[in-house]
Image 1: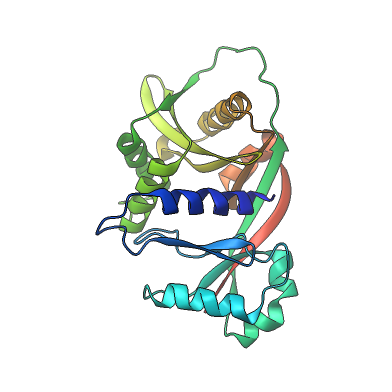
Image 2 (image 1 turned 90 degrees about the vertical axis):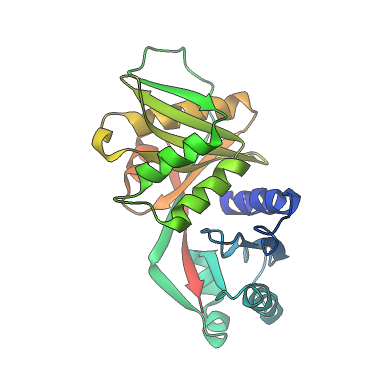
Length: 253
């Protein structure tokens, strides 16, 4: 299983098991091409994830996806690993999809190590059950100004479904956080963020180290993180022993 397949399976299971009310009636997760078409209203969960790994995509896959998102008033979109995007480029073009180089994401992976003896750290990291507080803090950390409605809704959804939420504090102040999604062998690190005024002080590195310990305690054998090329998350992952495993790109119509 790949990290994006693990993430797709995780969120599909969560979406399907949520209580349905007026706000969530249109939410859905539909299996397609070895992955899932995901939709959660008002969030960034609005595309197909994990498809096209086990086989080439087919016209009927696109028809299913287009019907799924069309019924929700959304344009269809796939997040594909670059190998699948190149392999299925002709069919993507035939169906009217274009890839966006600016949407490129990179995945980093590493085995989950046995934790080293605890050392005194200037940044303290704790597990929290305060999902509202966590999502509010991460919205501040991930936005340059006022967070968008989509970001706030995405973080609230992620907070509700994540396996573990962590918060980092520095000098007694909460300054960042991150999530862990446990799916198969993977511990997927999601939504890491640090307040702008305390960046470059080891907060994100502490969040990665703490989540690796959580991954080990929960029985995961591999850890993975997805981020944009050249981001601070990428540099931190490299320093923490993660190696680049693949890249993906968005194809939309």
